[in-house]
Length: 218
Image (cartoon, rainbow, N blue to C red; front, top):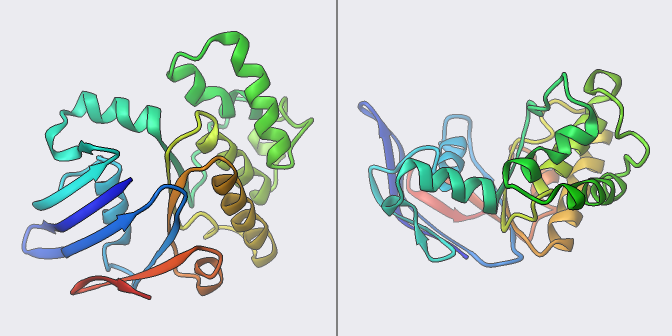
């Protein structure tokens, strides 16, 4: 599904990623760990097509990201990728239901299909009946559940999660991580989780550690 070969990235004189190789199969859930500044978030940005490597290749479901222009990358991200961030990025002025519906609206889903899909997802993440709530009325853990529902709304093939529990207490973090794993598996997606947490990494299928020489089994 996803193949990275010899990916390198630098910013000025600072080499951030060196000869990174990664193979991710459909349905696989992989954790990427490493020291702060090792380039974990940079790697996710490259996989998402938000940045481009200096050298090497990134192929996602047969599409060479390096051969796509910015418009094509935007379409690919919107249709086939989902994102969960540490800072949630939930729109504060939209209800829970409208936040979750946003990817479906942007992808042009028929209006009659959006409501049932949103209701299905809110039930899946344990927020049935909270669709009319505003984000300010939710706890941190509940807000991250909304973010997970939104990330999965359009049934993405790949989910990218960047420290998704960094702002949560330990109990909420464990619940959110289990929910993310179970939802990803249930929908048959693949996922990459960037984390500092050994407990979070233990919930994935395998762990890779990012260092100066690239990615290695963790």
